[in-house]
Length: 292
Length: 330
Image (cartoon, rainbow over all chains, first blue to last red; front, side, top):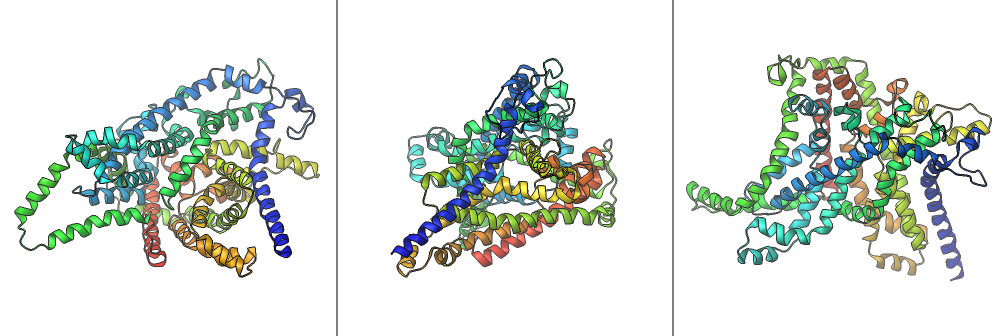
């Protein structure tokens, strides 16, 4: 028995040591950005390494500068609008589609699922969609170009369809006997039962819209429409820095601090909803099987 | 995902069974179909908006892809532009960037499979074996987080480490007396940065599927092995690993089927002109030549080529998955 206990202890030491190393590898880059954002200018000028200095002096000047200039709050507002409208549209399209396809007796169901799966497996690349959105629809400088084209995700439809299929037929049948049509059944019976899946899929969509930066760059030239990730990218690659903060007026924070604070401010909403995201996403991903 | 395929295929079997009934005439069957469709009228009503969406935003682009075989002029439109056959495909196959793009794309994909996957499996096993439950869930929470960060935020984090003037790693190099390295713009380093940052971001999240498979293993097996005196290592080797092999096989097949799909956003955020030769992938090239250089037809041809190869690969992978693991990938 004694030897076994020692084995077990050594094994746990190894396993948890490994986990600790992984934890540090993930935390160090985040820690670095946090410390850089808080480092006061004079410490930075002295060449202080913004990670290990002690005693820690810190300043929120970088955050102040970011938030008091109109550019950053405006981009945040744009991001919230895109995320809110996009998620709503996504759910408004995904729920009916998934619900209709969950009816196994629906004539034509197999054909529709095949047509949808085909678009999932066969991509023709960026240009044909770009021609449609920018040229045919003329949605340049229109946030519809960001919101509408990616609105429905096949994986999300299939996950939701699985969920609806799992609801016992008797529940729907009893409502139909009471004279409800299928729309009323969906609205009054199915949706109240589906809150967890609506939240999960809604969060999937919301994260996607919040993080989206390529389509805004593709379709929006107007700087006033740009969402947060695009602004962050411009800040990080240092184009026209004085456009984003009153940099010359009050030199209260270093450029590195300003960049870092912008990274963290962009992350903040995600980190705040993350506890919920994590719980629901784990479930949602497992529902979806091996597909990412 | 195999379940979906099963559930919608059952409709086909049902219909075959109906068709087998001999006395039904065509008219009777049409009548039955009509009745069934009327019964589902509200379902069709629900389908109007989503199917319009699919028609416009998924099928019109497929229609637009015909410009791969045409010389696209914006004024003449997609339909009016003249046909040129496979000219753009030939131009692509004969160009010097053809092999460069394919090689870069496949290198990034394979690196993710060869390096990323074993690390994810080891991490999943370590999480599964740890007996400190609080610490374990802390590790899970922290390692899942990067999955939800966009690649722009990743760029911010990477600059904090790699920037030649102020990055942590370069400060360490300088402190050790070395010359700072511009990792993101040096061809010798760019691929490593792409591969490692992808592993940093996605490994935690990809443990989820392995952990679910590990939880599905019958605990009696571990107990029986413990009674027989098997060490921890032998239990991992003989029980845990075999238990997750189906998941490993499926994920490997899925990755191989999607081997031409590298995160466009990652490359697009991280790369720059000096590292095009080692970092440019098919998707980034399509973007540059199409949107920036207005070579719409050539870019569409390259995108279509990638799409066609991708379709074939994923269908083959799916067949193999069905044979090898009795599971469908989609």
